[in-house]
Length: 534
View 1 (cartoon, helix red, strand yellow):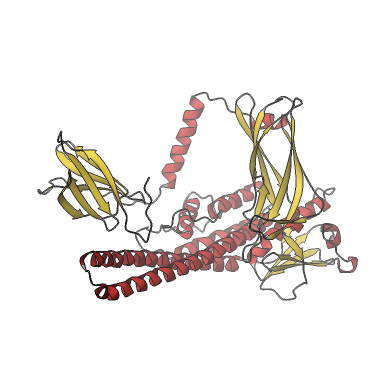
View 2 (cartoon, one colour):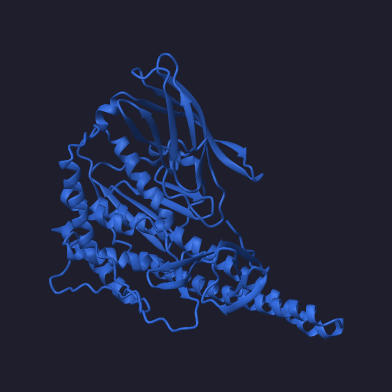
C-alpha cells in the first residue's frame, strides 16, 4: 500500500512485463496526474490522466489492447486507452437511480423463503438465555478517576458475574455497549469459566467530560458470546446511575423548552424518586440537575394536578430525564399495575425541526470548506512543483524569491483552510449530537401518547427511520436519507398520511431542498398525533 502526504509530491511505480519478451515497461505517475511511460530506461510517452491513481494495471479486452486501468484512493475506477488511433467502441454511463426500497423488501422476503426452504435450524434464544446468568453489581457512590488524558472524570466501579452451569471451563467473550460519552473499562474481554461455570469481571464506567455534548441514555448492553450446541450469544441491558452524568444544580425559573407529563396516580415526592441525590424534604416538589456541559434541567411537581413539568433551554437535554422520570415512576408505582402516563403539552415538533435545519446548514458549510481545502492543497502542490523546477533550472537564488513567497502564501492558505474545516467539523459534531438528543426526546414523548401495540408500531418505524443520526456518506446528507425513508413508509401506509398527500422523491442530481422533508416530517407527526387521540 502506498500512502500520499498532502504537501509533498510523491510518485509510485508499478512494474510489469509487456508483451515484448525482453522489454520491461514502467509506468510512473505523479500526484499531478502526469503519466510517464518508460521502455527500459527511455521515456517513450507521457500524458495527463483524469485522476491521480494509486494502482495502475494494463489490461487487454478482446480486440482492444493497451487499456490502462487505474484505481484512485476514493475507489474510482477508470479505463483509459493508450494509443494513436481512435477507439471505435463507446461505453454508456449507467444513470444514477434512487434506492428502490420496494424491490429491496421483496428481495428480503424471497431470501427469507429460501432460508426456510433450506430447513435451517433456528436457534432458540430464550432457551439459551436460561443457561446464562448475568448480574452487574455497581457501587452505591461514584468516584473520581484520572483518564489517560490526565482529565478528572466521574466514574463508578462494579463487578460483572457470569454463571453458566452447563458450560464449565468454557471460553467466552464479553462486549459492553453504552452511550458515546460513557466508556466501559474494559469494553470487551475474553474470560474462562471455572469448574462450576462461573466467572467474575471487575468493571468501571466513567463519563467523558464534554463542553458541548450530553449523555442521552444510561443503558448499557452486555453481550456474551459462547458456544452452546453451536455459536450463540445473549445480550442484556442494565441501567447506570444518573449521578454518573448529572449533578444537582440551582433551579432555573424560565426556560425555552417545557414538557408536561401527567399520571393517573397521586404525585410522587421527588425526594423519593431521586433518592440517589440528597434533597431537602421541604423542597420535594422541585429538583434541578445539570449536565456536564452546563445545561440545567428542572423538574417541578404539582401535587394537586398530578403533573410533572420538565424544562430546559435545550430539547436534547430533556431526552435523558424524560426517559429516566418515567422509569422511576414505574418503579415507584410498581405495586399499581394501572399506571398510565400522558403528555399534557404540545409535542416539541418545531424545536426538533430547528435542530434539523441547523444540522443541515452545518453539513453544507462543512462540505463547502472541505472542497475549498481540496482546491487549496492542489494549488499548493502546483506552486510547489513550479518552485522545485525553478530551483533545478535556475542557479541564481535571487530569481526564486518571488516563487518562494508564493509557496509561503499558498501554505498559509492551506493552514487556514485546515483550521476552518476543523472548526466546522466540531460544529457539525455538536449539531449531530443535539439533533440525536432532540429526536430521542420527541420519540419518547410520542411513545407516552401511544399505549396500544398497534400505535406503538408506527412510532417504532418512525424511530428506525430517524435514528441514529449518522453521516455515513459525505456526498449524501442525513436529511436526504431520512426523506427517502419517510416517503417509503408513507407509500407503504406504515405511517399515517392524508389521502391527498403525494410523496415526492428528491433527485440526487439536483440540489437538495428541505421543503419536501419538512412537509412530510410535520405531516407524519401530525397524523400520529391525531391517531393517538382517536
